[in-house]
Length: 119
Image 1 (tube, rainbow, N blue to C red):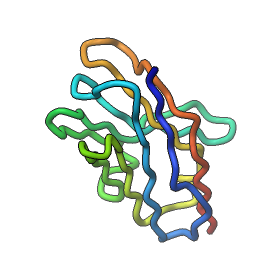
Image 2 (image 1 turned 90 degrees about the horizontal axis):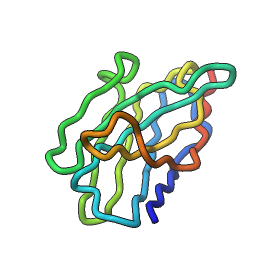
Image 3 (image 1 turned 180 degrees about the vertical axis):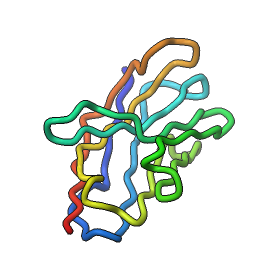
Image 4 (image 1 turned 60 degrees about the vertical axis):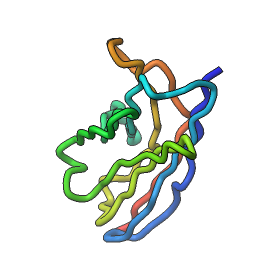
């Protein structure tokens, strides 16, 4: 059974940094793309960044480019999101997700971790 467990959220001042982690278990993820999404109160969930587990190919939402970095550690089966220069509008619940390459949607989701950026 696939499990994705996020950690690393918290309260930070604007301009600060946080690193989120997503520990993945239950299968080999070499055929998966892993992503970070976020959902702010009253808003729809939105894409933040993704990484292809096998080759490390990444892509980012415009709001994340230049500030966030997605990475993975194959040995630890863990994905990270380094977030720098945080803004109050980054406040949201952040979710990690896994998509089997070739399928249309993300198949597995974590429970989320809260990130709050104060002004």
